[in-house]
Image 1 (cartoon, rainbow, N blue to C red):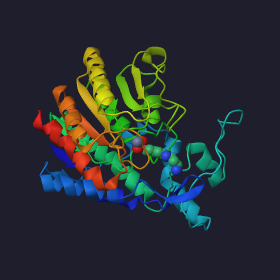
Image 2 (image 1 turned 90 degrees about the horizontal axis):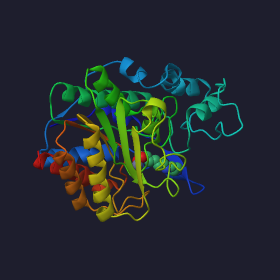
Image 3 (image 1 turned 180 degrees about the vertical axis):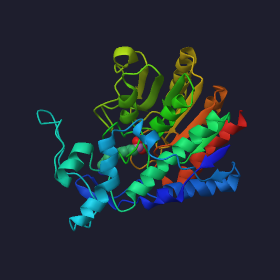
Image 4 (image 1 turned 90 degrees about the vertical axis):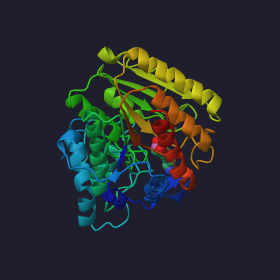
Length: 344
Ligand code: OKP
Ligand code: ZN
């Protein structure tokens, strides 16, 4: 099974995010991919290859042209204004405000196109986020060629990114772009299984009114955890999409006993739906030692998790999302893939 990775993804390295009233180092940094690559190489889990360039069209199948153009030009425009720090928003369009006007000011645009203060844009962001989409698409292409599995080592992650909004360390929705690419390649009954600790609000919103992609997500309950404003159990899809979204939120402190059982349930639901191809938004921030999360999975649990996904017996694309306990991240991600490969 191939891992796809582009060194260009490392060009995104934001300096700081805003946490507890303080500027803290970004949790989402290049060291995350480096440690995963090192572990995959050490375990000889398959070739690590660079992505092909599929251009911008597959991105535009998911994201709005204005949003893509904003991300492409934001840093250049920021520099032209003589500004040097990372780009971070500090005001957003909220209840009662005008949500349909794009301000001319860059600070206004930042607030218009984003939803949080943890997601800086800097000099290498465009190259990195573009590369991450190509990594995701190349993984999807592997499946369309008949491969049974592929791992798109994406970073920055993607599942919080919506049609025209970025946030939660995410800019382009890599998993959604890969999924759309599979549909456009003639695949049917593609499902997304999001097992990042955080709810994938972007993925949910992109497919919420559609019945061609089934989206199932296991995550920390949004009443207690980021992103707070989406991911509740009563969100089932809308219009023709009704019944094509399933949220399985769990309380803080959840361990493998509940998590594994919930994953079994999710896979049963996907089986009943008739899933033919699976895109897994893989976050290892469900780990007990994750610095920003509060589930209690162990490194060993990730092997079992990979085995459960293998037992589902569908072509599977793993797309990396979160995981911030960097020292254990290589082991945890490699454990998922080891469990998956061992039971194929
Ligand atoms: C991304 B992924 C701001 C706190 C914001 C954002 C968490 C994003 C997680 N300092 N926290 O789902 O792993
Ligand atoms: Zn996460």
